[in-house]
Length: 261
Image (cartoon, rainbow, N blue to C red):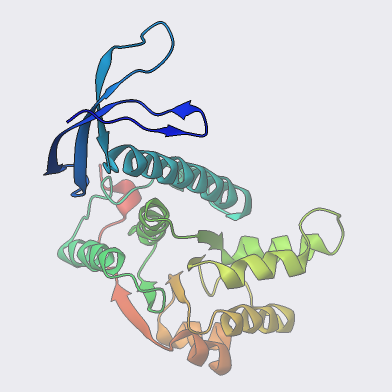
């Protein structure tokens, strides 16, 4: 049935009801009508219009969310690159290009994979093993995977971090407070090379401040030292704080960096 109305001198177009159906895209009930164009060069032409479909709205929202996620990931990458103290050799390290050289390292890689899949922001890992078994490689791989999920991550070589903190005392760049605030807030912190050259009272105190601020948040530690050596280097208080809710992964095997030989 054709129908039209006139409201305060404005003529609404004639309409003909066609049908109602559920849109397979948005699952909304859609009313389909045929309308006559009342004015303009196409006056008198009949067109079909659907009312109630939300597909375009959903598409717009999804596109906005995609662009927002891309922007967030870009900002996180910039943040990671700016604050992380990472060796050049590790910048291309991924979980996929880590090749275990022993059964223990294969098991370590699987544990790391599980950690990424089950990440809840609270559990810590301590990767222990001799030089060259890929502890740093696997640790930085975790940060990359979690950043793909929208997590904020930081990778810090502890010796370099302590040097960086000292440098903040003499320049106008990143301040110590800013650096420590960033360390505290990230979803995952990697502290690489624990126990290396930080036996001074200042270093031990600064390490405790970092560990204390991270209480309840996920941290991955790596070290070449055994339990006794690490406890002696860090002192009992730091070692105890570090081991809270921490799973130890032993990474023993041939030197990963020399595996081709």
